[in-house]
Each structure stands twice: as C-alpha cells, then as structure tokens.
Image (cartoon, rainbow, N blue to C red; front, side):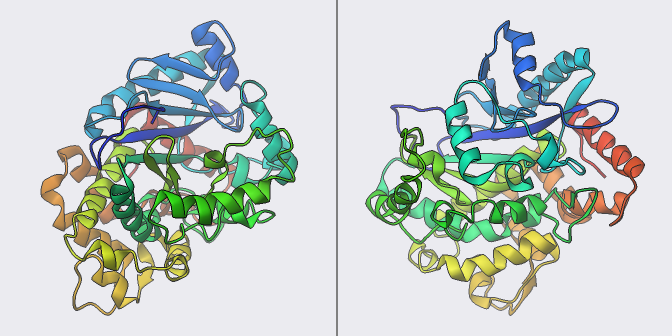
Length: 412
C-alpha cells in the first residue's frame, strides 16, 4: 500500500504483497539475480518496476522478488488474473537465464549461511545495518517468503477496532496458510517453519518484535509510547547514521503503519499460486469485518486479550496448523462458539467459512474448501515428500509447485 494523503476507511480497500524466490530451473538452487531481472525489463538497475496495476520490487535478499498492488484495491478477486499475468511475465524473462519463480514460504534446501546475498543497491544502507546487528544469514532472515495484507484505518477509533480484531485472529492464521514444513532438506516438526525461524531472528534486540503478537494498544499515542519508543531506544546505539525508520524496524506479526493509515499483517505464508493467496486474504478480511462490526462479541471484549494469552495458541498453530487443538473456551467464544470446550483450528476455520460463505467470491470458496478438505499447503506437501525426503523427491515436489505457480492452480 503506497504512501498516500487520502485516508481510506475501514475495509474500503486492501493492499496485497506477494514474495517469491528466484531459482535455477534445473537444480532449484536460489539465484540472487533479481537486480538482473529488473535490468532486463527496464534497462537499468532499479528497486521497483512499475507495470500498471502490479508493481515489482526487491527485498532484503537478492533472490526474492515482491509483487504488489500498485494502489490498494477495492476488490481482492480482481487481482487474481493480474498477479498471474505478471508471474508469467517474470518467468518468461527469467527463462533466458534458465531461472524461474518458486512459491512457498521457505526454500527446502537453501543454506542461508553460504548462499545469502544481501540486496546491494538502493536502500542497502538499511539492509547493511540489519546485517551488521543481526547477521542476516539465517533462515529467519534470508529464507522466507510471505503474503502481506495491508488494511486501512481513517482514525483512532477505526484503528482500535481493527487492531483488536487482527490481534485476536493472528494466532490461527497459519492454520490456513502454513507452507514451510521443510528446511535444510528435512521436515522441521513445524508446518510453519518460516514463522518459527522468524520468531527467533531478532532475539538480540527483543524490543523490535515484542511477543510477535502486538501489545494491547488501541490509539496512535499509546502505540508510539509502548511500541515505537522502545524500538527507537533499542536501535539508537546501532543506528548512528539515523537510516532506520521506526515503522520499518517494527517486526511484530502485525504492524501499524501510521504513515500509510494501515495495519500490515505479516504472519501469512505465501501459497502455491496467487488464487490461493487471494482466497486466504479474502477470508481473513471477511472475518475481520465480522469481528470489527461486533458480529459475535463486542470490540471491548476483543481488546481485553493480552499478547501473553494469545502467544501460546500461535506457537501451537505454527507447529500443528489445522491440527492444533484450541482448549481455550473464552477464545472460541470470540467467534460465536458458545458451547464448545475445545476445537481444532481446522474446525474453527470451517465454522468461520460457513458463517461468512455468502460474503466470499466463488474463487475464494473453491480454494478455501480445498484447504479445509485436504489441509494447509504444508500438510499437502509433506504427504508427497515424507519427513526425510531425498533430494530428487524434493526437486520433484517443488518443481510441481513451480508449475502450480505458473498455471495458477492448487497443489493437490
């Protein structure tokens, strides 16, 4: 969601960002050539490629490219064909270098300690600062791809409602979206290994991430005092050149962008194709709309949840995804489940899907039904790879995922 003077109202628009790896077509090894891709298209080294409704941009590492809505969209489904067309366009350019895009939230056998190349061009001073503080050659820095969902608010009242709803929903999002079960060539025991690695990547400066679930703050003034101020103090001894923006340094699972009038959700693993990404985004937006409108419980009750109450559930879900068993009756009550003592995260999403079915597009319904029937992408991947796959098996499964991306179809 680009910087804007106009403040959009709650749910008036959505900004979406999709991240993909660039890999060799034959070996699937990561290729740090996003700058070459951009140069092939524009004739110069650049950080952004403007192509109408979809823009391309670089990320921290040189093998990851981001596709994003150039302007926030009023209709999420309208970007299915647009993202798919740009994926095909990128793959056509990359083919000349025997390269292609690869989906999922983590590369299955990348060695981040030997293969990481930090983006060396525009904005490098920020990336260099991160690298100096943390050493960005770990899975939690250089081997992760996500979908970012940006939702607007026009004032403190809207921010309060949106932040309360997002905090409440964050713990169960990976039950739908987990797509990173394999690191270093083997199953990690976490279906969302990206979030598990991310959770530990900034432990040197814990103020930047907090508990990952954002603190219970519901105004801009409180957010600056309780979140941005500690971040600035923690960064000050390292950021002697003042290159770091406090918005950028905030690494929670959802971050407030008061410069944009938006909250960005960051716990969504990238899927096998843009139709699946947009389906998950559409369902998340529908649930957040219901929460902010007080469909099941008031915003007042939603605000009562501490990050320390929500974090254990999140940690359980990134390990087990839909199989995580929610035994917190009060949490289930937030979503209109009055009598259940416990329920799997998968069943909770089925409940929400049924409740909001009429608000969803047909494409969303199809992809969400596929996830709820066959499991999140990580579960489907493990059915093919097993827990200790051979390199040939990994290449076979991930090559199939690359085809799903090119053809915009679900992985079975």
